[in-house]
Length: 409
Image (cartoon, rainbow, N blue to C red; front, side, top):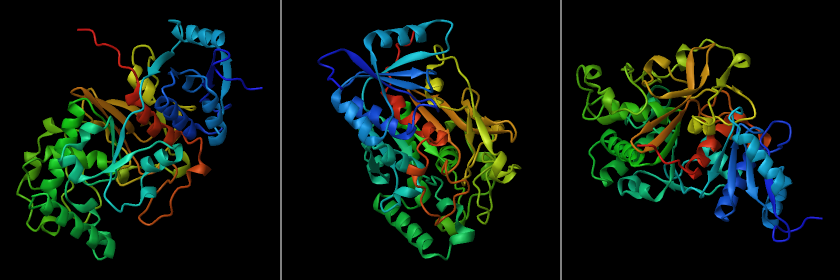
């Protein structure tokens, strides 16, 4: 017989290990639901795969049952015992209080297919609400309304994803280019590259001011390239109507980027690549051997990367994208490599601090679609409810909810 929490004090434990959780991805939605309903939530880092401890309620139990999330009802005494174990200096564990349901924005163009982006699929499957915004909203300072921002697979350099060679005659490419030019002019810019730079600068300033930004695939390196090329024309005539300026590589300012440095831009418009940051063409690995490992951190001292790497396995299946992975030689000192393939000498999952805010870059397009191509069918997440690759995305979604410790001055 289930009894309400008003009758007896108890907690709900949402286990996140491989053995006892049947739907890891939906569990994140339960945590978000709990925060929306002002229930107390503790994220138990490195305890049973990054479990969640939530104050009990009949509504929460029903919600777990409806969504197919496994949970355990434990007494207050058991809860106190778990927290005592976690607090032991000999245990690489930590309990982090989650305070509020973060307001989430997804930067994505109108009419974009929501199933073509891993983050929107993860949010929808986990039943976590989000708002879609794009250039007009960003340039009108709407980012201040949100705690967390995801960048869809955008090209911030104004080169239309470097799709020119393969898709320049296709109706969708022609229409996307026309729409981007129309929007840029409507917003007061003569070139798409100038308008996209203005958007990138607004997003950078959002991070500096304390925002949390998460990006995947080409939105990661193209964002930094756009910032580094501020005031420099790196686009050829088929993209912006005039040739690039001579010697533009030497004019790139790496001091303006978030994550990357000392990269060489890909000059040819016929090559589907932005720069030497990405390792897609340099990879020498078979699909069946393509995995990356998550780093281990001290949960009590390195709380942030420990949160972002919570999982039920330290080994995650690799997956490709326009930007699959990052050359470690192009990553700035101080940026954490949280996931790497030593076999391939590449970084897959990185995190850094800029000003008062944070950014996380995740290489690849879709953690459950190895080599995603334009027009491929959508991924059905109900077939992958325990996906470690998708868990990394949802760790980032909850990250802004965590109570921040006071910095010692």
